[in-house]
Length: 313
Image (cartoon, rainbow, N blue to C red; front, side, top):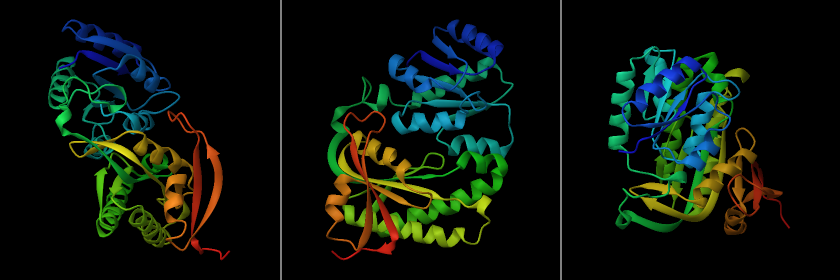
């Protein structure tokens, strides 16, 4: 079990109390007051666990958690002043490993830290395998990666948590059914994100189009404020597979270019476009080379106009 703890909470008294308590049990605690520098701190210091408050200034804990999960697999325990069943479900649905409502007994936090780190594999920054991972289970493959996120998810949650949770479950079940139908596999689904892999990029793109068509049909029955629009990013690249999980730039690029898709739309990398250009009757708009976070070289990005037929040359 590692002893490096990153504590993120804007309550100075709580930070001091938790730091002193955990240090008394041999932990090394790095405490910060907001979510703005969490990722940079993780990259620099490689903590073994993050204790993350939901209500933070500048950037709320839910947004920070999504950013952590886009790059890292280290354990996260969420803290919040809210404690009813719906809020507990939200914290766990967003990819947290555990959830502790305030006020809490520091002894309970210590017990949860030990339980979470005991069952989690040891990971370094970026999800790279560290000392506790057996490399016999690691392999590399070329995969088509689909990453999907809900636009304005935090706003939907703040306005109607119960409705948002139920709708998210319904939409995620629909997405999973399409992935299976196109011979893919849902790898992970933290919070509002869905990550899937396919052996065929053609199957992956066809799946993405089918997902957006079905979700668009469902959204037409909702008011504009209630629409749950997914943005989908697709990439074809080399990935590391460890115990069923996917890591590497092939995954990260799919998640990054997803942001270039319109709500209800699809963005694809240049590697995807090169494979489907003459295989699928889809109209694609070239958005140019884009620099994306943590990827050294610019990525060619295209937007799939799935409502329009492919123009003849």
